[in-house]
Image (cartoon, rainbow, N blue to C red; front, top):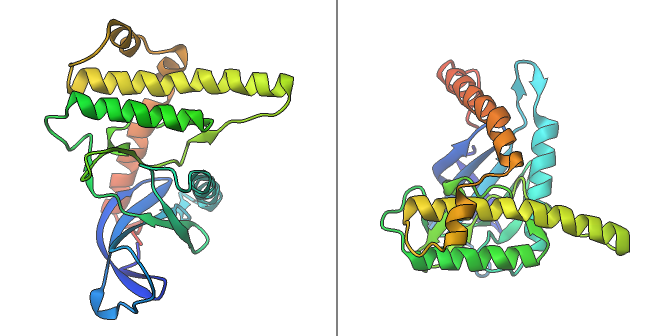
Length: 246
């Protein structure tokens, strides 16, 4: 990731790299006050996310990075003005984009998470689903933020889908697919609630959290070994300095 970037003629410096994997790198940048050009209301902290565009064992990853970053940009544009999700600031180069940093802790980092927080998270997911979105990445606690404002936030819309169709037959088919996939989001939310707080769960929520669908079970069988393998390869590549962080 670059050590410094510019947004609206203001310099921002790298503070922390959150993630760098096969598909994207995500980093936090802070405003360098000495160079503030006073060109309007600019955020103090911003996030730069860049899709992978290097080679992996001779295989170009640029098409994958371009596709995923493009999809996330489109998702965030659709959600412009939608509370408690990343607010897109603009594109960065061919593979990246910027969004406002959300102060807070991830669900993976937080301690003593209240039952009220999961009520807020459920309300957020309900609103998101009402916009015809399927989030699909709710299984990762690092994608769920407990904001400094006390609100629930969701980040990382890289693999999310906006599924809407027009017409009687096509619309009916799309609604059926969308609702089926949205149930996977609820499964993961209830599972997190059961494991993190185990309070305020209804019988239906407990039952739902303990009964993964066939789709989720198949995903675990196929994706989990692949993910572990990717992580081992990445550790080796970074250790051998064959894959650069910038």
